[in-house]
Image (cartoon, rainbow, N blue to C red):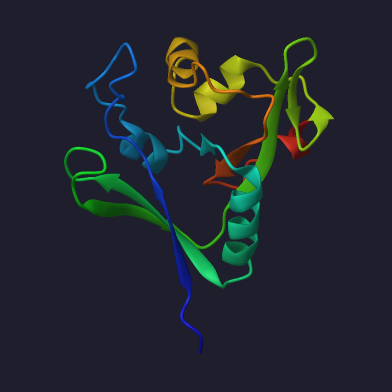
Length: 150
């Protein structure tokens, strides 16, 4: 039997140095375990869509990890692994609002922030300077999907 591929996704235990809350705990591990943080948003939608297909077909697993010390300069420890995930495409048009899988939605920044385990202010600060006109991947840890809920 072919060994499954492992796709690593790191989550931050602390707000990054570019954030106004730099160094403070994000509490993401606890938030994921309590189903408060039900997704993460990442660049490179096409890559994550391909990975999700392999994970959901049983060819791979998603290993969610945290750094044991300083990011990129310490070892990682696995905090969760998933054999099923969801991926939706997220884009924003400055005039029309948020689009999910190329369909206009009624969801707001508040909705995405809450489900990402952040306040609206922290979400905006976290993604400051990121271009949401380019597709982002919403990587779901639960069965919740925005597309089926509108």
